Length: 432
Image (cartoon, rainbow, N blue to C red; front, side):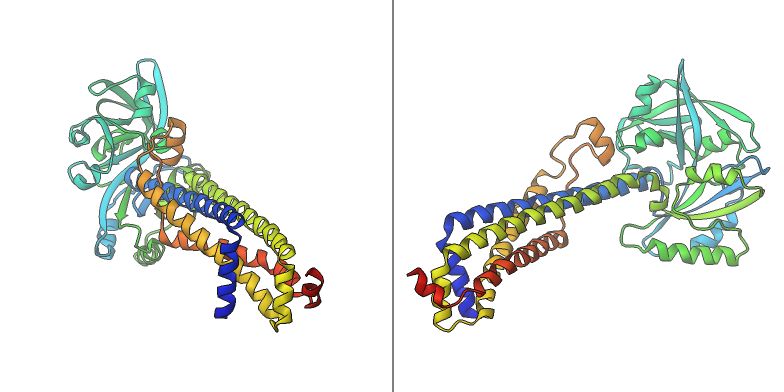
């Protein structure tokens, strides 16, 4: 084996020009694959951060209340018993916060726009508020009565600035319309597509006034735990405890609360039903972004693998033709056919391993250097949930890229190696 390895290495160094060309192609292919996977991971992380900052906890206990079968409000009418049951089940390291949610129309002058609204308790969410990117004003002022914070997109659409007055229109519990004048106290930075769909922040008190909720009502109780927590298992535990306590629960579904409103409105029941959802459920309408990037990564992987395999296959076939005398001589000296196959496959594996490792290391280093350094156009930054290119290289993905390309190089070497092994010792004598 050691002898085969020495022969394979020697042949790679002897064919420097061809070997260097193949090395460059394979390293470049590996770098592209690692770069695309880093982008996919970075966008997924940016999306999760935006969703768990604006829209959802890692796990949510929300509710839908129907005063009549033909009206519906996304609220827990009396959150006190739910909170009393959930609080003891919150794992160490997780935090429980109360957030409201709904749909409103915001107006200023002759401008109107419709968006989802999120309410929070600014006094109790001091740490969470720092995660919002505030462009102008201060989110802490949401504690003041009848105030609002708008995303940059909605503020531009309504033509308002900090200090201006806007009006929020909403449907109250029972179906009546309500309107509340609010003062703009902050404008948040761009938060990707969420800036368009959920760009209105108010206090829990303001949302209760706007929607006609009682003081003990809450939109949802949200658990923020971090990426390491198994939210699916925790969600199952909460569902079982809530059912055991006598609460009626909606079946688990991979949908955002806004997508559940219309189907639930068509159902004939009335009263209160709770709903346990994860951040992935609440951002299901954004899944096309990560799914699209995952499909792009798979497509790039296939193309890269095809380029590596075709290039190596052609190169080794040429090498077999050029090295007929050497192969025949080795066979005449007693080298068996499996050893000839092993020699050529080793050449392919060595080239694939060294080149793909080099490409993966260079790409990972570049991703670290360029992370959050390259500004993006507005359309792309909305899609990627980041104003800069969100690259996040991971060692495991780099290793996966190296293994994939090395395996492809080994497979591409098999046919030329078998062709070389089929040569007889007489070939050496005939080529002299």
